[in-house]
Length: 254
Image (cartoon, helix red, strand yellow):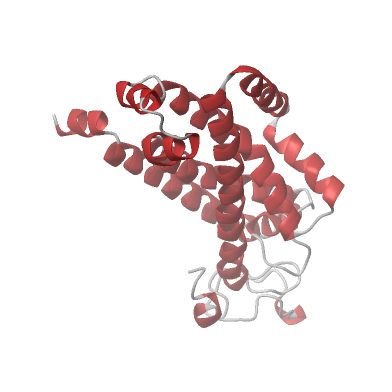
């Protein structure tokens, strides 16, 4: 839907029709219209682009930063581990949405700043995950043997440690995309997301909030889209976890 939004959208999502304000679902507008006469279905289709873009870009940013911090802390240990993990703990001390809201407010409300804010607040989870995996992997016999024969740090990380931490990282990324979409919707609902007239599921919820009794479809359909997308991504994460963990796969087979 996001990839073909321009082709399948029945109307321009920003087009105003004051003669069809808050029209219920009909053949002309399958999901009705909002308080400005904009087609809800068209806004829903184009809003999927914003949600998925934020989810993918912010989690990609969080993955890169988290992997770097986790590898440095887990592999070298000592003062580097203490300093980096205390930094991560400081971020964990704040509620995710509050921290994302503060960062977005400091940078200014825009789609790119939402991506940066959501990426930063998701970084600690990846850093903790990678650090834990590295601490486990570096104690294995093949890593100790490689250290004895004088393998360089770069080759050690690239050939012996990194390949063994990617599976849980993929699962974590798929699950965090769902959380990032929820964060973007929350920020947009609070007025700190993509500025109008950019279609956004969170902004649609905000606009429809005042018309719940008069026109419930303006809030129900974007809420349902968020629910279905997040549920599907959680199913994807569970499926990847089952596929990438042989122990879970064998247990499910039994």
